[in-house]
Length: 247
Image (cartoon, rainbow, N blue to C red; front, top):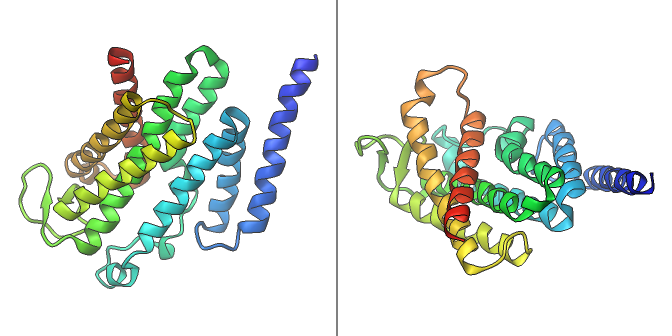
């Protein structure tokens, strides 16, 4: 009974802390009103399951993703390829980016013996998402030549499945930055594991572009958010496979 009370206390505290922070910070231009509520739910699940470091790593992703979205926003908006709502994220963006990582965090509570395995997948899912955000936002603003990933034929910036040299380099940087944060926050440990997280996150960004080019335009319900969720899941699967095989 005491153990149950202890666990209940963790989740109650996680809820109270997150919604206090949401109340204090909801005027910041990162999320829509509903986005902040869903961020509070996500934060509660993360803080209750993997603690402050896991919670902080996702805050880092949100901050960096928002900042890079703002780079050259007026230019991108003038060409009709900017993120909607001034770059503010809504509930669909919150869960499109974090559903995979959150699921792995919760699974680590159910099977703590596999914590390291789940955290590799957790880290790589956010490495992939920040890589994708960097690649997309920098590529749309600074990409001089944009190609469709399936044919390498020139296409307009913002086309589903489009890639550019500038965006690809930015994606490499995004994956590296997120991996280093995960390493410094002790979500993962060791150079070999960090390399797996970095590599799987970056590879998943190209696979996301391929899915966008081949599938997204053919299926009405295949939204950007769903593709994002698929991308982060692919990154987690790749990293877990590599971890089991080589570490």
